[in-house]
Image 1 (cartoon, rainbow, N blue to C red):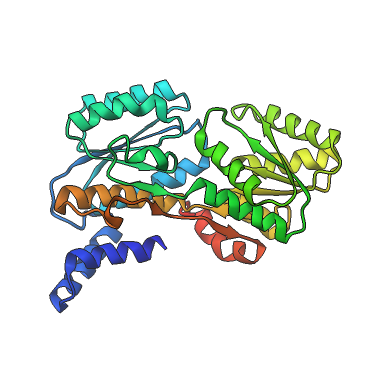
Image 2 (image 1 turned 60 degrees about the horizontal axis):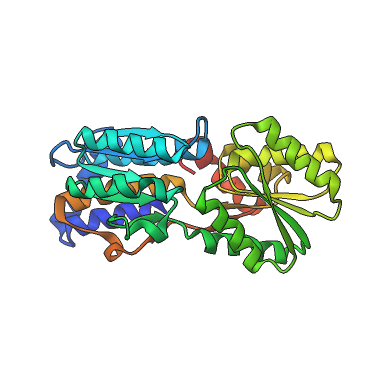
Amino acid sequence: MSAVLAAVLGATLAGCSATGGKRAEERAAKAAQGRAAVDTPRWTFAMVTHSGDGDTFWDIVQNGAKQAAVKDNIKFLYSHDVEGNKQAQNVQAMIDQKVDGLIVTLAKPDALKDVLAKAKKAGIPVITVNSGSEKSKEFGALTHIGQDEVIAGEAVGEQLNERGKKKAVCVLHEQGNVGHEQRCDGVKKAFKGDLQNLYVEGTNMPNVQSSIEAKLQSDKDIDAVVTLGAPFAPTAVKAAEQAGSKAEVDTFDLNAKVADALQSGKLGFAVDQDPYLQGYEAVDLLWLYRYNRDMLGGGRPVLTGPQIVTKDDAKTLAEYTKRGTR
């Protein structure tokens, strides 16, 4: 999908003539060699996210952003913090560096409102990614790139219905993250069975496992566990095994371990929002805006998901997960 969109964007700039097509091919060849495919100034774009340490999802986002940065002759900076106020401080630091563009997540939007107003006052274009689509335009962003979290949750609820599940647990690993709440809300909206939320300490995997295990031991009727991030899926599988539960574990997001677990049958399904595409398109759209004042979708949210991934799909995607692009 990312390759297709990149090609479409390249065609937009090149035009439909034979000469334009040749130039597009030349740009693609240069980018493949790790060289800039354009001769625009070397602008600096910064991405500031709410990621915690060691979250493989954000590694994939960065992979996409870095590859687009090479192609677009961009210097790419990245910082992150799970705490909203510290994320805001990181954004302020990028404003102080006078970056040419900002990419931010709005998992905890209230913490970012004031600092994004400062970015707008400084004339720095902003694109939001992954979380906070409902606040993106209000906070002055050009557009939002990601999946609609409620719609993604509804897709999970529908999938649980198709699988005949009756009682599920939605495991929230980061309190205060509005996107996580929206996912579980979406599941509850579409799921015909009983859904309960379980809050765990996401920075402490032993705590995550023990919390899920205790929940499954106390309620033998639970037949599905939904985790909100790929790193938590294997932990939920271990918890179910230790609890002697036959509950199916399903998850949001995809990585190499999840792809392997889907193939082996340890996981039922995953919901992929294509983090590589979120990073790639955020950088590419900022470049297009700086270069030509273009904005894909006219400023409306650009959706990258959700896509339900099952055992049948996992084998095909495994190659991409291992190279860090899915």
